[in-house]
Length: 250
Image: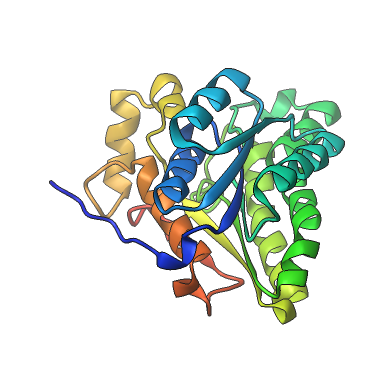
């Protein structure tokens, strides 16, 4: 099936920062914005993949461990010097490692929150002053429907992803007077290379498809398309809400 996707003129030359942009959903988000003519900068811990994607797309890449907030701030500062202040922030970085609740230590719990949640707030804090000065902006926080489905085997992850919704709603209120929109994109089970390598067995996929309304597996580019819409001026009246890309999964 041939697909033709929308072009958003308002994204031309818009400055976009993406966290966790070197692979998976983040890679498709970077590619999507680049194809719209946006000025894209992204952060990732994987220097090799990040550099390769930057070379291919023309995006600006900064290596950073987002668990280190000083490193995050420094990387955003570098992107600002290279491509300008952010008009769009996509808080994408996360890692859905499986873990048995009985084995979780306080140290592991804190590290999982730092990986999956904490950096989102500090990324917003870093870019919001420039958006306030500009009088507009779009912030998109990536969540997951895993906690909605009561998925097990990763309680620290599902807790962090549930909390993303609270972050979105609160910051949408705090920043809305400046015409800064804050939304959550909620993917279902997306067939990234990581998912296919680690967990997408034939049995698991068959069980998952029975719970979806649509018969097709979700590819990362469909999540990216929702992000592009929310970043564009077409979504000017969209804020404080959840936008599902989960094929009707129940």
